[in-house]
Image 1 (tube, rainbow, N blue to C red):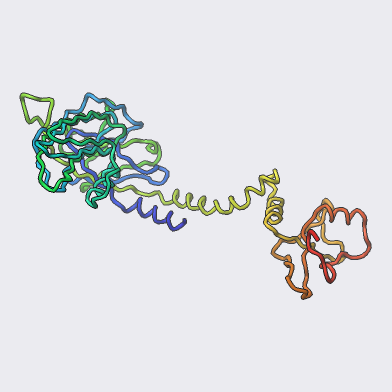
Image 2 (cartoon, rainbow, N blue to C red):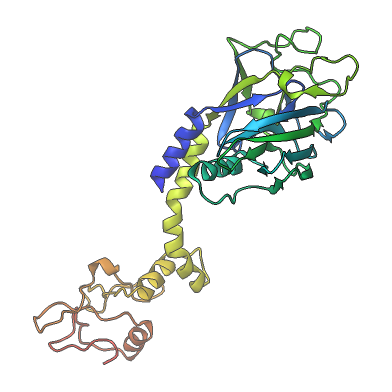
Length: 380
């Protein structure tokens, strides 16, 4: 378990997270808990992405994003597939129309996460049954099938066409994606600005050698990082509302989470304490006095088959504490019963009531440190 914990520390600190952003897109950077990391380093190959750090999650607006349209006849080779991927914020919409021409057939899948798509693609490539998807339908014999979907989470969404036939298939494929975008505060300024930022060129910090450094320390612990790509260019002056998918420019972004070593060590200490707590806490709860460590320890030794041996003293009556009660050594000094008749020092099971009675009756003879020959076991 400790080894897995150490491995997780190395993963957080050194494994890069790569993603692709489209023009006009913005998204919240998802990271691990800020308790375990003290910041993040963002790399943008094109130095085009604006990076904002704000106090709380901004609201979503489903009317801000320019729709992305695709309307083409595509040809899918025998037993092949094609896919189109977009990172969409919650509330974004997807409208799809699929028509397999003639006597052909085509499977359409909608995946709502990268993990789901990776699993689906593996199943398709292996020729196995495809089960990992959010939506599915089949278009056959020139049947037009349609789908309307609203994104439930901020995630990668993938549209996939699969041809299971042993011949090429022509498909009339149309879709329109409307992005929901985060509305940033009116006076928000980028922590790092791209060279194509839509903001006026102010004194904001630029990327330093292509890297934007974000800190989550101090009053920035609960802050939210928002990445914003440059706005969409206008390709068609007659239809300003839509942009063709083939005209989109991709921006490659990579980020690294910087681990907080001290908090990881603190978490490791808590991890090491768990086995100790699990072992003793039931006994302490049974005692009803969790603060009395000795009583908890004694009960645990009793309940787990431990034996207590009376400590002998010069008076022959055992040692005692300030209250006059006898004290006992730990189970580590007790001698277990043997299975043969070999003489041995045998520890008697601990019984507080019997000892108290022997003290009340009083006996001038010294209390033996071990029972005489042929001593009995508990319950005999």
